[in-house]
Length: 127
Image (tube, rainbow, N blue to C red; front, side, top):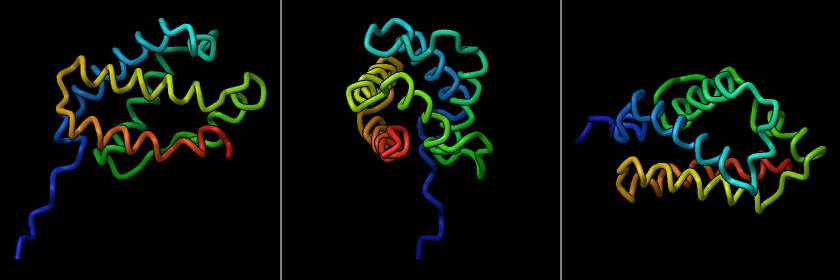
């Protein structure tokens, strides 16, 4: 019987250095994307990137806990006051995929990351 644990997505994509590089490149893309960049006006992007790195580390299995706001609470104002909707979520997903491709992440791991990100959609959009 095989008792070895399968390495986490966090480990398979390259750990902390890979998540850091991905988040930094991701936000470069997001801030250049006319469809969604307005959601980040006035946001402390250094702090935002730090939160995102912690969240992805947790979501990809790299740590046991995440102490930030849940997705619903973190995005509620964006939905209610700024009209965050499905098209914006899709733009974020496209930027995430493009980021991981640019960093040379294999397609199967991009698919796993996309599935994890997509699983947050209803909470992000407060549905």
